[in-house]
Image 1 (cartoon, rainbow, N blue to C red):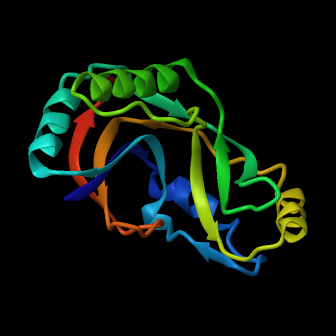
Image 2: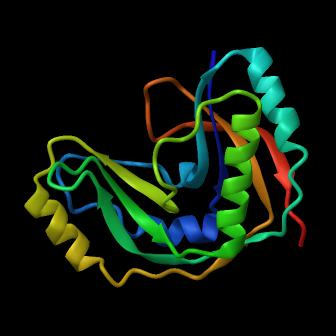
Length: 178
C-alpha cells in the first residue's frame, strides 16, 4: 500500500520565506521547508494497481501553470487547534486544477474528498497547544506575505503512513502549460 496525494511543490525561495514563521509556539512539530507543498487532493492508502490507474489518469490533465500567492496564516481545529498553515489566495487556475483532480479520481472509483478545498501550506502540526497561545502566534504573524510564484507542474506524492510532515517523495510529475 502507498499513501498518495497530489499537490504543488513550493520552490526553495518561497520555502525560505515560509520558514521564517517557524518557532515561538510550544507543542508545534514544524514541517521541514523541503517538505512544504500545497495539497490538491489527498488520496490515501492505495494498492499499486490503483496507484498506476491514478498516475495514468493524471497524465491526461492539461492545464495552464498555476499562480500561487500566500495570504496570511491560520490554524485548523478551532478551539482545539491541530495544524498551522500559510494561506494561499484563491485563483481560478488553482480551483480548476483541484476540481479536475477530484473528478478524475472519482471516475476511477475513489470516494469524494469530504472536506472543502482550502488552499494552504501546512507549517506545523500541533499537539497540546493551547488555543490562546495559537491565537497569539497567529496575531503576531497576521500580515504574512511572500513573493508569489507560478507552479510549472503538479506532482503525485507518496508519504509514510500515519506521519504528517514528510518526508514526501515525488512519484510522478506532470507539467503545466507555461
